[in-house]
Amino acid sequence: MLEISNLSAGYGEAAVLHGIELSVAKGEIVALIGANGAGKTTLAKTISGLLPARTGEIRFEGARIDRLRPRERVLLGIAQVPEGRQIIAGLTVADNLALGAYARHRSLGEAGIKARMDEVCRLFPVLSERLLGSAGNLSGGQQQMLAIARALMIRPTLLLLDEPSLGLSPTLVGEIFRLIQRLRSEGMAILLSEQNARMSLAIADRAYVVEMGRIAMKGAGQELLGRPEIAERYLGVGQAVSDQHDRRAEDRRARLAAGLARILPGAGSAGG
Image (cartoon, rainbow, N blue to C red; front, side, top):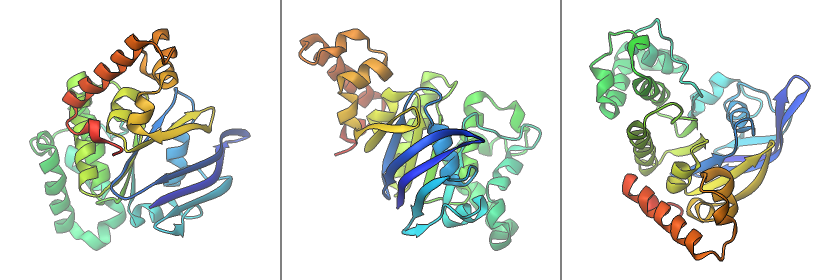
């Protein structure tokens, strides 16, 4: 569905992405793992058209899109949930949702937009209770739900999620990741950019490790979850995992995977 080849991008004279090669298939969660500043957000912005590609190609459903405007990419079915939510606090929840369907306003009409709102509110019942309230009065978790619901208003086939768990409680993080799994089961392609490597790798079919704007490693989500170097750099497990022959480290990773599977049903089968 999404095919990226030799992609480079940046800001002004600063180059951030270098020769990115990446793909996302229909009904697949692909995780981007990397430290803050590695280039994950820049990649998401370049795919959605908020930042121009300098070199390389971005193809969606077989057609080249790297020269299209952001609105044209939205109309093709690409939606982004930006880091930091970026809801409009002074507008109502309903108005924020309506903005998510702005590119399709003419074709949907008021009745169509209302139907879309009802549809996304079934995923987030708390929003339906507060449609006429100010978005700025929502909790952090509710604002994240609103940001995701706003992106779903166009019924995207590719969803770009940039740090959806940032600042949320563990309970809400679990809810968000279960929703991501549900969207995958419905056939949506998802590119998940997250610093929470544990949760991302637990549900991802495949993953790419981004370091200094380059793809440093790739593989199945569960495979990368078990790699000592990934555990040491991104899972916060510690130096003990660096020796892959250390039995205690192997047991620790097994317990970690089992614990995540209990939190996120089906996580243990990701990538299978």
